[in-house]
Length: 341
Image (cartoon, rainbow, N blue to C red):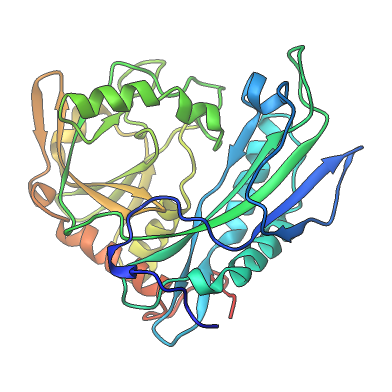
């Protein structure tokens, strides 16, 4: 299919309406088959569960054009599994995981003209989401739900090259033990908005959240997991039941061990040991890895020497290897790459 007439090289990371989106409805205890539609408008009751009690969750993944011209997506089965976990926690009906993956593929295929060409630096972002659509006035789950998927072509997360971030240790708690920190609920992101705006106004790129129980352990930012590299080259990620299980982070840990032969460790990371790490990065779908050069703890600067100005050497190897897998330059582990066309 002929590509749309889009200036791929100058795309930003924002919304651009594409031709088709997938819509399925849950009513009377069952999901319908779902359809692809051109209608991008959502029509719901003013008293819908999503509007009254924030009963909604979402996912994010991408489609790519590989070096040999195939259109593929990356590990959608893990997005399906994570959304199922989110739904269970929010008392929402699970959209079947196999149908989730198939719907993702159908939606990408229907919008293949918007998948940026290989080498452009751009990708097709895919956003599955679900919300309570029936009226709810008492505090209880909705009876009806809508599952949707839209796509939008996006440019590289970093315009003008990767630059190291400066983040602050936040006084605000992101998630509580036994709460919703481990799922991709919209409410988790809404409550962090004022804090990220404040951080930006003070000249910081992001917030580092600590565990709310003891305020001694590193958790994550408002939308990404942390990855650290020790001075002797070990890759370390924080372990906590309130951290969202990033698909990118989990993939990077496999890449570190299986492709690069590095020692990896997932464990609790204390705030006090930040000064001992050589590199730091944020893991997520949008940028894969965003390097962190400095953490500011209430005026005290903690510098990561190897990633102070740009992506550190080990972080760079991780980034290059994972993006090489996604773009078809490097052979992927079985099941990681699912072909669309």
